[in-house]
Image (cartoon, rainbow, N blue to C red; front, side):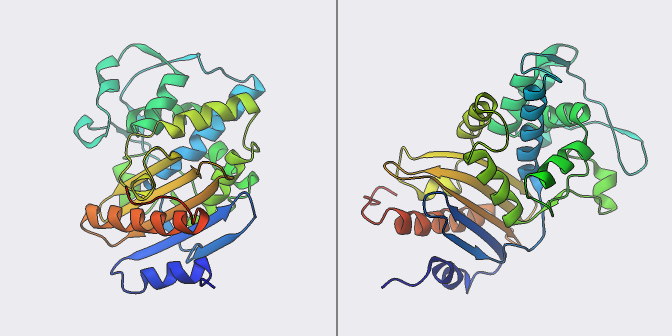
Amino acid sequence: MPMPLSEAISRRLRTEPGTVAVAFIDLGTGGTAFHDADLRFHAASTMKIPVLIQLAQDVDSGHTGWDDTVLVQNRFTSIADGSPFTLDPSDDSDSTLYLLEGSAVTQRRLAELMIERSSNLATNLLISRLTAPRVNATAHRLGADSIVVLRGVEDGKAYAKGLNNTTTARDLATLLLAIARGQAASPAATREIVRMLLGQEFNEGIPAGLPPGTRVAHKTGSITALLHDAAIVYPPGRDPYVLVVLTRGYRDEKAAAHLIADLSRLVYRRMVPDADTSAQ
């Protein structure tokens, strides 16, 4: 009889040099596996998940619309002291939006760029409209009651003061579970959320441990010595599952990505034991 999944994960992590947290929830059986799932991490770009949920809920309420437009401008206010700051395109994973400064872009397109290409500029434009307190409160109402969303991204003065967005693996798993169950927004808005998460362009983590063609709705996050991936995995022929892996202390991002892929492979083989994983 195989050892419990949580024990297999802990064994895999026993000799790892960094700090790793894992949360797993099987939508089919209700089974769970957690490893340090309540450790707090800098959220990095995983905070864009609750931002997307808030936008979807505002669309549902009629407060705004996916095709309402936002003026693209690169000027924001630090929560540390109210001073203005701008984003550096060279530090952003998407540079295309900066070329549209002064133009109007739909919220749908901003959301797509925020999730699929992890655009920091798109994120700050959206959260300036939605507001961090509302995003935070919505995440808490969905059960992610220890996540902290204080601000947008690249607010250097806030970072220096320790005013950061933080999360746990359990928080992110709770939000993804709500999305997967259709509880985070209406059916139509949930389809938009999942479509965007399926379009994620950075796939070196959880997707890299899965058979080619496996559908993965996920969001990554990275800053110095930190790499995260939070996903809903849709194996063919069975119910989906949620897997979140948060890491810190890995100066080599490729090593952290390899670990996340390895954990993803371990979980998938447990969930789909007869799958052909030779191409992984």
